[in-house]
Each structure stands twice: as structure tokens, then as C-alpha cells.
Image (cartoon, rainbow over all chains, first blue to last red; front, side, top):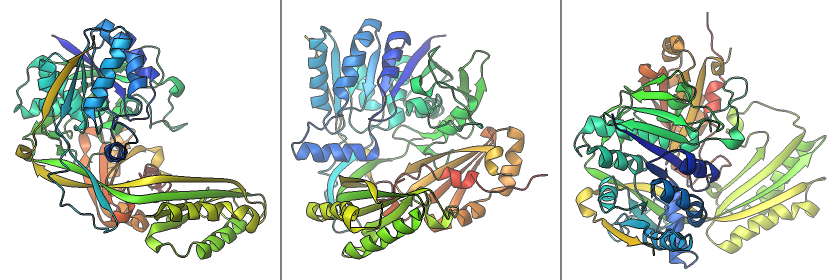
Length: 437
Length: 102
């Protein structure tokens, strides 16, 4: 039976590059998929594009493409990625120029547009009147990717596409699955969902020393699926790479970011993961997956809407040794007064090392930590106000409790995301292609 | 004993929804999890951080429970001012509970 080998080359925009290079070189892959577009990333990209600060595609596009294109071209591995972000066309043109520079003449680079529905969704408002709508991107499914594959694209750049669809499309294309064979599309979606976070399937985001030990996380290998035409697959990784692919890591990942496991909604299918089965093969790091299913796809498409929500300013300062917590508490009291002009819901302070992760109510009482780091974060809509918060933390050096040390401050633009829905007929996608010379 | 001795967990997020999977290391322990770790118990445990009730989905085939918690709108991933805006560390609150086993 024909087996299709698909690799997961990135699980987020900032992911490591070498594991994908290893996959491209040694993975014997027909497809290598890079999922690099978190919910908020596309809104940040839209904003950067609008302000002329960037072209709007993934900032690591060039580094990733330069690293993997030669091996992919040599081995006949097609690339599918949402690194197009807010500007798939510019990402594709950049990829074409990289290919030309690398001597990869003839490389066919396709791109997909149509996910940007800001003009259709212009009337949507946030619950907070201070927030401004800056982006609206519909989650596209496999159809435009299938069209692009039919055009013979070697590399496909998309904007917002449902993550599992990036992986399902090549399965449907290679095996000629029907677009209404819901159980089969559900199985393919399950495989896509398992691969989409790359290293999170192979031992990343998993290790817990003494309970769940994983070797070689410093050289974690990314996953490969060997899919057959019935939608069953073996999940594996390159021999010699770090990490561990086990039933346990698969169980964690199949439920990751899932609500009802029997109804996982994508543009392509309502997938059912509740009946999935994993079985470890004799050989290490090989897990067989079967048993997922699916029912009809949802009528509406999800739209991710992004709102400009001012700035988040942050400052931190540490206290150590005897009385550390008391001095940190004093610093907090000073800042509560100095920054009292910030709206209460837009401001928080935590003690790192004491209660910053789970809040004071859930954290084990720790009376005498050796060192405490006070963290202050505020949402401000004027950059000057944001800088004032940072300055207040910094000025504690001289004006605050004894021994304050190691101040760090930071400022970032804040984008808040909401979800909306749109009828799929309202979306017009377009597929284009350019060949490197 | 602590729950983490018989089960592992992974935390994920979608907007202001948080999901925490709880997976028995050994499938024989699944019925115990299903009986002891109820939606109400989880809602009570996370009460300071969430709003509304907790949804629990049972996946016996995986020996797993999946809990869906709702955080206040101000604490959605992209609006939260918290150090752990995603809530990625929150599964360890659940794994830390004491359980009583024969």
C-alpha cells in the first residue's frame, strides 16, 4: 500500500530550525509542513504591515527557507506553510528570490489569499471601547491548498488556514479522498492535529523529571507521519534524534487545545478524536494511530479578529536574603501609590517565585523565600504612560527598599483576539503561482 | 498521595477557554480518575481563576479526562497581564491534589 510521509517542521513561529533541516535532508518526506501562525501572530503581522514596519509575513521566513529549500528541492519534498501570515504574496515572492539566489531554478512557489475578511467584518467591535479592530482573518480549509497542489506548486504559502488542514490537504491530494468522506477527513485531521505542534508530539512540552523522563531535548527530533490511504498512520521521528515519541506523548497532544474530543471543528470536517487508538510498535519511537472519525463539516467558518489594545508595559525588580519578601512587599506598596492612576483592571503585581503563576489563593504559602522578584504589568493606551510605568520600577533602585536589584523592563504592543463566524460562501480564495528563474 | 503519581496532564488554550487533559499512566487507574476527579471538584479547585462551571469530557479509550475551564474575558490569552498568559502552568494545580487510594 502506498505510504505518504509528511513531516512537521515547526510548531510555532519561533521554533528551532535544525530539526526541520534534518527532516528535509534525511526524512524521505513527500511533504514538510511548517505551522508558524498563532492566533495573535497574524494580527501583529497585519498591524506591522499597515504601519510599514514589515511586509507582513513571518520574520523567520528567510532563515527557514534558506535552510530547507535546497534539501527539499533535491529530495522532491513539497513545503506547505502558513508563514505567509498577513502577506502570502510577498512571502512567496521572497521565497522565489531566495530560490533563485540558491540556484533552485524551476522551483514553483504558490500562494493563497482570501483569508483576510477585514472589509467584510468591519462593523465588529470589542467589548472594550478603547480597542480598535485591526484584523479579521477567516480560517480557510484544504480546498485552496488542493488547488495549489494541482497547479504543481513545490512550496505553498498561506495566511490563516486551520492548522490541521495544512497536513490534511496533501493526504487528500495524494489519495484522492472525497471532500465529503467525513470519517476519512476526520482521521487525516487527527494526524494533522498530532503533527501541528511539531516537537510537542516527540517529547517537547512533556518532560517531568522522575515521572516522564525524556532524553535529548537539546536536540529534539520533529515528527513524521507515515500515512496510508485508509487514513491510518505510524508516527515516528528520525533515528538518532532526541526526544521520545510514545503513546503518552500522543495522548497528551491529541487532547491539546481541544474542547469536546468528539467534536473538533475545522473548516473541513467535524473530527471525532474520542475513538482514536494508539499502539506502540516494537521499534522505538513508532506509534500506530487509527480509529479517529468524523462527521459533516461546520457551515460557518471561524474568523479570528484582532483588536489593537494599547501597550503592555512591564517592570521587574528582585530582592534577596533576609527579609526579601518584606522588602518586595514594601516595593509593591510604593508602586501601588505611584501607579495608582492606572485603571485597576489594567494593572497587576505579582511576586515571582511566590505567587506569580497561580495567584496567591492557589500558591502554597512560602513564608521566607530566599529571593523574590516583584513583577508589575500594566495595560496603557498611550506609549508615554507605558514608559512611565517602566520608569517607576526602575526608579526603585534609589528610591525603594534596600537591596533592590536586577531591574528589567519591557514594552510591547498589545493585540487582543476574539472569534467571530462567517458563512463560507462569503469567502473568495485565490491561488497564484510563480516560478523561480 | 498526589494525583501526579498516577496521572499526567497537558494544558492548552483557546481564547478564554483553557483545557486540561488528565491522563492515567496506567489505564487500570482510569475508573478511579473518572470517579474521583469530577467537574465539580476541578471547578472548586480553580475557583479563584475561572468563571462559570467546568465541562468534563470522558475519553475512556485513552484513559483520559478533558476539562474545559473558562477564564474571565480579561484573562484570555491575548488580554491577560499575567506572566503565564496562556495558563500553560495550570495543569500542575490539578496534579498537585491529594488523592486517597486503597
